[in-house]
Length: 357
Ligand code: SF4
Image (cartoon, rainbow, N blue to C red; front, side, top):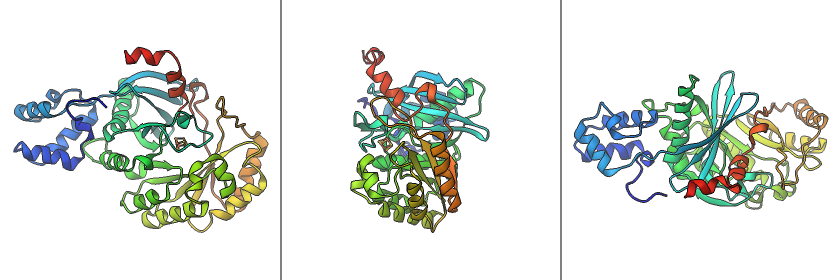
């Protein structure tokens, strides 16, 4: 992280209120500040409805930590755009905008790299570098919103915490971020329009259920039993499938939000009819749906995509047992759309050195 003044984007609303109070300003100044920050201003002088002396005092105490768009890649279909961002310590993260009929969704990163070790994922190959601050998560939304606005496009209407990193492994910053984007004067994102994806950190899933945030929880299951799951997800050695399902049920009971179970379909591994039957058996009893994701064939990881007829059979078996199934749209193949791929190819090339100079 850059030394020097703290980044005001890392402060919660309550903390900004305390800053205002210390300067003899009313608490509502905090919401004015959040409004400007979330609009993407780069300097306190642009906060024109604050008294000049207060703007100066903010400048003396804080910086506005901007993250910088390094590269932008739009898919041939036009549905997805991937952004690479440079952080203040020269680390690089990525996020992707997906254009749906109902609006634009931003899939953002919560960590630089990841330590969860899922075998099918490019983000984890070099392990965890560090967790992102709340300000760096906000920065992704702010900068992409600004970029979309400049292009005359709609802003971000949905957030998906499904880029690089395990959000619940960066629990405090992630929860504060979700509270911050919810503030009406700022980004003003409804909790219902936020989806958090976890590989199944059971104690943190329980904590999140108790937060009173009704965000959608998306649980990466990827296998219908412990034996298979342990082969592709190290987290399965800490928490059994039964524990993950129980925590998911608890989340539903506390929030009323239907759970999404993510299931990456891998050829000759977890794509058999018996696996679909076992999965259907496992997840009954509370509202949920299964999202089928044909695996991304990432070089060096060795997983193959199931043939179309096998994918269809798997979905049919689930549906015949009353499971609600969706299939993830694949929009980003030509821009290395899978989690962590673009950052990896960027960092392994020469270009990163240029930005480190
Ligand atoms: S799938 Fe998610 S939790 Fe698993 S290694 Fe990749 S980023 Fe981490």
